[in-house]
Length: 156
Image (cartoon, rainbow, N blue to C red):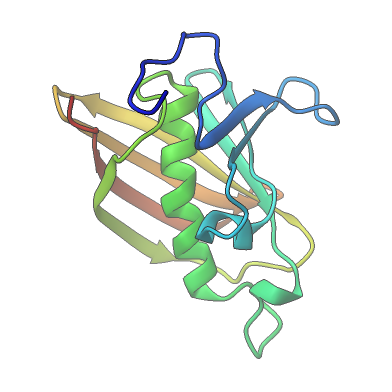
């Protein structure tokens, strides 16, 4: 029935957040609708290690620029999505209409294709409506982009 609450153990109607069958210890984080932007990024997996959310994707040719590096727009889009995957993994929000209020970045190096990109996201502070985050996007421990951002949690 539309508008009815769902039990806590029921799958979310819009998101998938479940153990990844091929990556033990990692969770698959995805939208159920494959026509949404997140699907363009490919498979996204997440885990928490020592209080840091590690969010991964692998960029392919469709994510490249003419220099055969990962396009800067893809890096920005992945960082934005990674912040939401991180706050889900931290247990701060389940899903819903939360929004990015700001995202600050500094590009440090080019992203390589066909190599995992990992956003390492740290929560700095949570208030009633806001979550403040910072992180580093890396490939094989080589910095690609550093970032900070704020997410506004969904209203009740």
